Length: 112
Image (cartoon, rainbow, N blue to C red; front, side, top):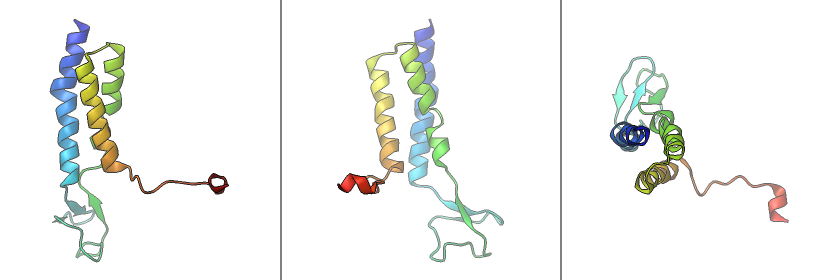
């Protein structure tokens, strides 16, 4: 049954992976590109003690990697409303994490 397989793949693989990555993103560390030293918090200088730049250990793309596929599968195989809503709730969590509501791009014509 295609619908059952799609539901199981989303419930057992995609959803836990996305939720876990979102949780990891919010509590991640940063590491040095060159020497690999990990910091729990970004140093005030913004650089590693060796002088090189720092990078995040969990990236936005790894959090969102199954979101589009999950939404597509849920629509294609007409999964239950419960599964669709779980995907939507997880998407709202991702949006609140990555999109800043205060920063909006405005044009000069928006003020006239």
